[in-house]
Image (cartoon, rainbow, N blue to C red):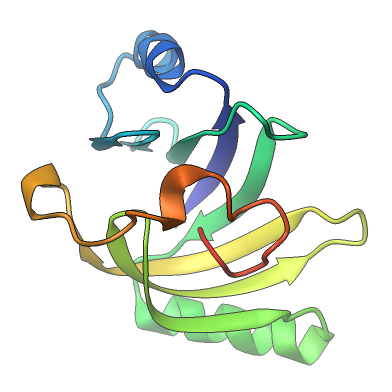
Length: 146
């Protein structure tokens, strides 16, 4: 399990350059307007969306799990607590196929729990994320993009 921090950035190239230096790592994925760093130390998935018009730098926070059972347990826990807002199965988004659940905190902050079912790290083969990861759909649509 690792924490995911999804940020809106005004300039993807500048952000990638900075975070590459900060973490001493290159992005796991890099596309037009999108990048993610899959870090082991610290255990973090840093997702960057180029979105210069965003009202806030924070897009959402998430938890990436590696097993179906972990996502199922989170789903049951959030549902029992009455804070499960949305579920998505086999959602094509951000250059991967993901199963995910969403919750929205009292202050509006979106939380995502997700498991990557199929990852695409090759831009030439990319059929996922072409519209999802532009940053435009992610401001209010819970579950629209992760």
